[in-house]
Length: 209
Ligand code: PRP
Ligand code: URA
Image (cartoon, rainbow, N blue to C red; front, side, top):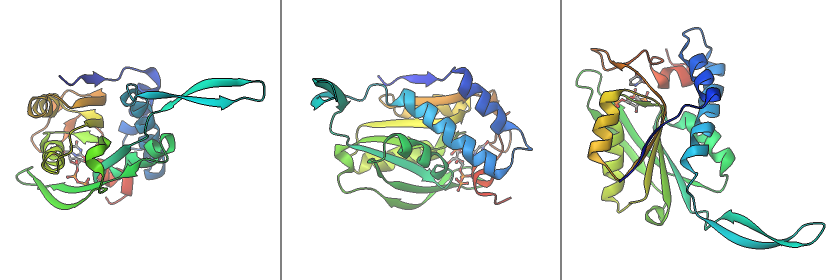
């Protein structure tokens, strides 16, 4: 059974509070998304396996730990998921990156797929699917369904803000996927936006509105 983890670290809560403000600029918003992504990834990568490595310090020989295999892959759900990538790649610079392109139809709120490109060895990797918002859950479920059809099994999902409805739907659809959430909000409004949320994450990251 996968775990659902709602972060409660003070740094994270503080930074998400800054992101929510409508007066936060595109530049600051983008920086905050990366910082928050890094903090969530810190927790989401906690159970990565370690291996012993013999090294020499300036003083003596010793055994240190390193991440075993380093076979990781970050998968942003386009386009807003791209905003989380730099922060995560700073922590794991050798991770590969796959892309899943989905947008939410504004009327039906159903996800529409338009792109998918994964590394050829993706099924051997630990996959971190990232998207700032988990609203109805439709986009996350569609992205993970697509990856599963490609034989990819080891998947974690990271988001900055989730609505209870989307979180429950995603966990029900994929009980084995670990889900890491920066903040769990109150509800969805009639337009499918998270309340209180932070508005349209893609528009705020890329300055398109
Ligand atoms: C946003 C967000 C998620 C999706 C969440 O993307 O980044 O992908 O909505 O909503 P859901 O849980 O109801 O599916 P959007 O469709 O606005 O596309 P964008 O990233 O291109 O802005
Ligand atoms: N997508 C967003 O960008 N924001 C929301 O509140 C819901 C979906």
